[in-house]
Image (cartoon, rainbow, N blue to C red):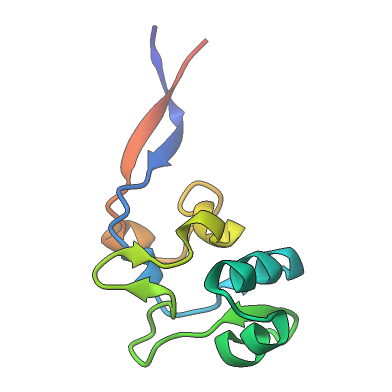
Amino acid sequence: MSLDTSKVSYLCQRCGNCCRWPGDVIVTPEEVDAIARHVGMEVDEFIQTRTRLSANRKHLSIIDKEDGSCFFLEGKNSCLIQPVKPAQCSGFPNSWQFPGWRDVCEAIEIPAKAG
């Protein structure tokens, strides 16, 4: 079986580097409900204390810590909301990437198998 080098996927190593990249982590209403439930908060309280308006002012985004990392990142790479993390988080780096992501991400490249 040959490898198709035109398509690759990436196996996350849970390095947490993407969680330290500043920017928006967009959350849908369904994700807000699931995360609030997971952390034991009422939805309204969660929205008021754990989210902010995204840069484009169209969505809610999880707040950052002072250093730009995700509010729910604990220690080097432990996600406090791992079982209910937003699709944006679970999709990285296969569904989307940010500029310069390969310089910080430790994901292993997996070439697609041909045929």
